[in-house]
Image (cartoon, rainbow, N blue to C red; front, side, top):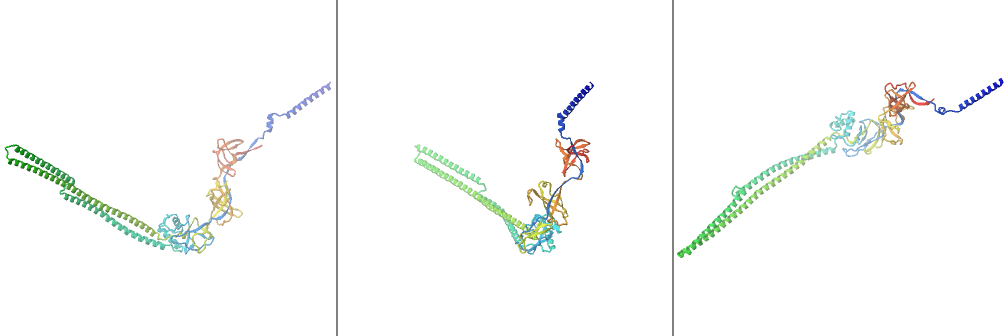
Length: 572
């Protein structure tokens, strides 16, 4: 019985153990979604921290180039107008000969050709009285050579001419004085000016004569007009005006007509009285024939007297009318005489005024000609001083120069290009990648070296092309020209390395890796600072960025060297 109970116990324990093992096995095989997500999630990332540094930042552009002397530039001889022809080359320098300012670079027909510094080429003869940029260059060169030209104002005056003379003579050459043609031109101007002065004096005299002639014509015209008026008055018989004379004649005619009418009326009345008397006598039978004859005779006498009175009245009226007509004619003649005298006076006065105008115009023309010739004579006389012919000087932008190539020959015409020269200034022809070209500007300093040859020098950026593919470089580069500072080593022809510092910080600055800076949603820059396991953003102002580092400025105390900033994350 006991044995049976033990078997049952062991059987029960086996079943319980099997069920437990099955439950354990099933629990090990079955997982929840959370457990599955937890098991499949990536490992937790940890920040990558780097320290904030205090360091000086700089950025360089490095390229290579070939050293050469300055670019060859031509030396040309300009023709001289004062010499009247092209000279022949007498001497020429050898290649690589060096010339300083004021030295004779060659000679033409026994005359020197000096080299001076100046940007403008020699293009004309320089003589007293002219001005311009070329004259200023000459004055500047004379001053540098120790020959005082007076004020450096671009005006070739007597002081400039004296300095040129001293310069020529100290150099062992005779200065170029006035040419024969210039002297002949001055003499011709002197003669023309003298003739013009005489013509002006004659014109002045003619004008004075014309002025007096106008005054005389006016006086004579006034006198003739007055005389004509007096003659008219004398011919009219009184001193009344013609209008008064016309009125008087008209009244005289009317008076004669009135007297004639009165005489005719009186005669008619007398005839009527005689007719009446005769009628009385004829009708009176008591009258005798004698009385009748007497009455008839008286009537005839009255009628004859009436006819006579009529004739006398008609004659008086006709006489008055003729006198009036004669008076009117005399008045017209007198007025015409006075008017003719006035018109003749005006004509003679006008003619005299025209002569005066012509004399004044002639005086103006002769005076202007004399003044113009006087100015020309003064200018020509000033140019008679020492001068610099155009074919005795050449201007070069920079000196000294070395002869690069001689293209002319001795005894050839001295015109056009005769040689090419370069300055003694060493330059480097190089190139810049398209991305670096905008960073390089003229005036930047350049470190020049070649470690294998032990070459070290310095220079200045002189030229950066405006577009790629120019001056012998390909379309992916910009031409770069560098001027080499003075160096005792002749670097011409060597290939050297050029290092151009583009930008540098002023001393030590606070800097972090560029990957530590990020942008906030408001556009400001920030860095994530780790403070003993606690991370917080600090707003910064970025500055110079180079070599993987960027200069940052943060509010006081918020970012200092030694603090660590987050530059990324890594999985644990």
